[in-house]
Every structure is written in structure tokens, then in C-alpha cells.
Length: 98
Image (cartoon, rainbow, N blue to C red; front, side, top):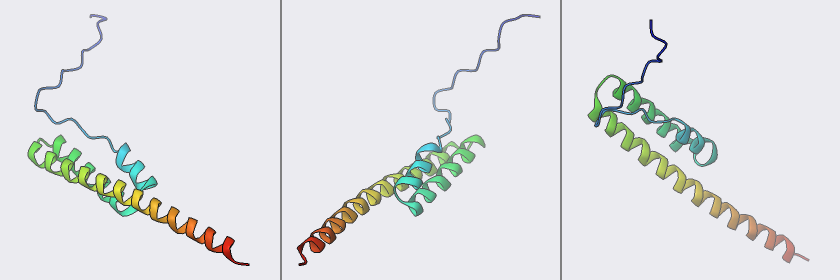
């Protein structure tokens, strides 16, 4: 019996590597709830398809998840900017009243 630890297999070029759920979860919490949930769902579907060996479907689902993440971040930034502008306008309107 050898004390040599087992060596993990090297990833094969073109093999599916599971996508992390951390970015979609952070996007869901910080930016846009609905878009983030869509990103979580598509990321999970991509990981499931990749684990079952359907690489083409996994890549398609991963691209869709990435699109949902980008849209969610953009919507979150737009919402923050519009909210900041409206808040500033409200503060100006309050300070202008006698």
C-alpha cells in the first residue's frame, strides 16, 4: 500500500467545467431580483446539462445565464442612478420651500 495521495485528473480540453452560482446570487441580492433569479436558473441548468455530458446545451444555457446577469447589472445600475436623481430632486424641492 502506497502513501501517495491520489492525483486529480487533469481537465480535458473542451470538457465542461461547472459554472459558479456565486455571481448570479450576488446579482440577485444587489441588482435585480427577477433577472438574477433567471441567471441562477439558467446557470443551474447549464451545470446539470454539463454534468450529464450535453456540452452544447450546457454552453447554450451558460450563455443565456450570462445574458441575464448582464441585463440584471445594467438594470440595477439604471435603477440606482434614477433613484439617486429622484432623491436629489426631492431634497432640492424640500429645501426650496419656505
